[in-house]
Image (tube, rainbow, N blue to C red; front, side, top):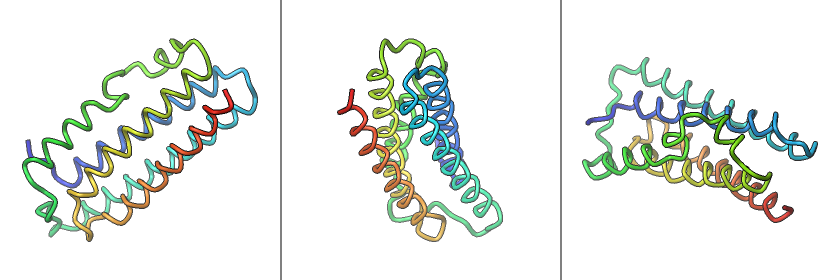
Length: 161
């Protein structure tokens, strides 16, 4: 399986849309108003991530010279990307609202959110290594930094509960 840049960005779009579904479901079930607001903010951030991947994909489609033959693009990197994508929490659990409803407490939801963000960091780090600089690598780096911020703020929320 050889990924092209558009397919790599499609993976990001799919993951971020799943994140939005997760945070929207979490917000709708949250009884605590502060937690509800927190999950809504995370859902909004996921929208901006989707927009970024859509833009990167559109830019790739316009560039007929785009190639994925970068320094980090190896068979091993491609296999790792597939493994990281396949093991992502939202690829393993397709019924996201049911996953949220199955949580016994807000703490459980926050722990799932933390897993989502950590899985995304791993996945996007792999993407970054495979996507050449001129095809959006710096944007993926910025997205990784945002995901790391999400990890930190979710950890802060977990400490409250």
